[in-house]
Structure formats: structure tokens, C-alpha cells
Length: 69
Image 1: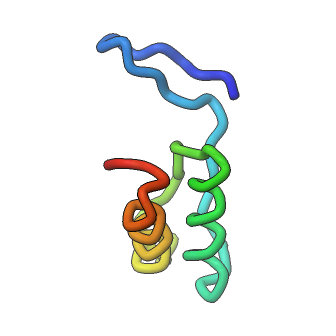
Image 2 (image 1 turned 135 degrees about the vertical axis):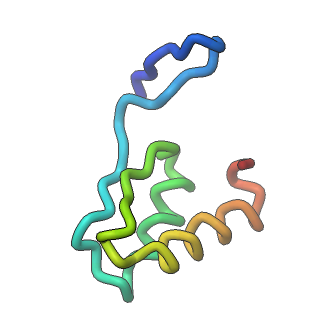
Image 3 (image 1 turned 30 degrees about the horizontal axis):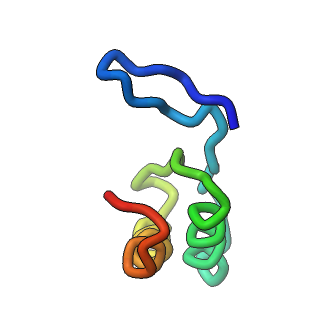
């Protein structure tokens, strides 16, 4: 995956997952699997109405040690 350099020498993945119109019943699993497969850029907004489900997917990945905050 291609990354963009940030001023503090960290890197931002150039590929991200858009979460708009993602079905709530699938959202947590999709986010979890995306993180498990290397995604670290998640595009979300409060207007999408799926913040809780996104959070559950992120929490699962954190709890399993796939990534850190």
C-alpha cells in the first residue's frame, strides 16, 4: 500500500475505506476486517449515522491487538 509522508515522519495510507451508506448490520464486521487487512484510514462523519458500529469494529481490532490507537 502506498503511504503519504507526514511532517512528523509518520505515514498516512493513501488508500482508505469510505463508510457512507454502509449497512449498519454489516458495518462493524467490515471495519474490523478492513483493519485486519491493513486499512488505517477510515472516512466517516456523524451524518453517516453509523458511528457506534464503526466504533465496535475498531474496538474489536484493538482488543485483538491487530492495531494500536
